[in-house]
Length: 274
Image (cartoon, rainbow, N blue to C red):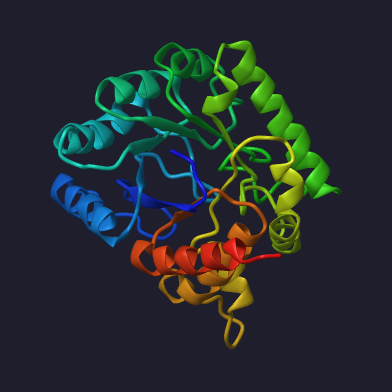
């Protein structure tokens, strides 16, 4: 799946409370339409999440997550031409999602929440995204930030990879994500973006998700008010370009049509780099 071209992963949240698009695709019909629109716009993966991981959010029961997720997966199965990734921290959800057609699992906790998820992924042989998060969604912006963010991220990702490998997940199936915005300060998000090449040296494909995030809202603030999420597209474009030039293989975005263009241009720059 990975090649010379950057892969664009479209974000599809079937939740009432995600930070950017919560409630927008809560109905099955709306979610299905958006998945097909992302495919038309240039996404090569659609990442479906049924539990919000925005700052301050809490965990929901397995039954509730499945009730949101399964009807969408079942409706898209055999119809969507691009792979579906499921954004979940729970082994039980991953097992059922893969059975319903999911081709990848994206775990924002990096296997800290439910290490059994690694066993599920290993059994089915699907790719696994391991993201770094300091704390939990409920606590990640309240805990003290790491004194050395790069050291913290590298340590956390190495630990997650070790857990996955011990469970039998093939090295070729692992993708790492530094977790921009997840338990990092404003400055640390930019430091990570500037030093992505150091994370790429871990030897695994790199996924980066900056789309519409809070640090961009703060950067683009006017009159002391953070820019609303829908006004962060150009800021997102800058970070997507930087991510690709610094080694990202996959970019996870809300605005697929726009960021597919950004990725195409950034890839051309890389192809001609001396």
